[in-house]
Image (cartoon, rainbow, N blue to C red; front, side, top):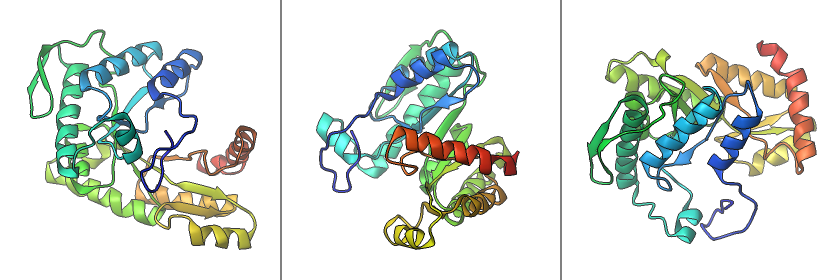
Length: 266
């Protein structure tokens, strides 16, 4: 369901993530596709690993398996899924990502944890990609440390300033365990408000989250994206929900973005 600030139940169209990814995989040929991110609270890691391997087969090796520990309170409460306290939730996530990695790469996987137990478990067929990229979406220090140990890609939210601080935390986590930070692909997303009117931009800035809102004309947005590039991000993700009230308006804004901004980075 859509998120709410107070955790209350609300209605709205929300398609099931993995059904949609499978459908997109079947009708496209070049796009990378993935979840951003699928909470390990809702799916057993064995089911999630098998789903990911199957869709990687369907897509001929174009899937990114994005996972997280879970955060949306109203969904967990309404559907009776225990979100757990933060520390236990991260413990569960660490077990889950270890199991998923094992199932996607090894012939058999055995893990006896506090939250999950698998015994000599197979996962066939294996994904096309070796390894299938596992992306962790997080900004917290402990989850970032888990990313450094287990993941191939990392995603965070934030403005160029906020995100640059977080990518520095990831680099330190990698260095602490002797991993080259350059072996993790880094992506970032923000709330992009593309407005040409300065007064409207100021009004938006007063109400939008300061740590993740990027507001301005396409020229100004392009300059802000330069900040992400300078910080070391490989990919900037532009969600559509701030780009217009209708699908047509959002497509039009994506088209403008493609024509006026992307050529600066090609």
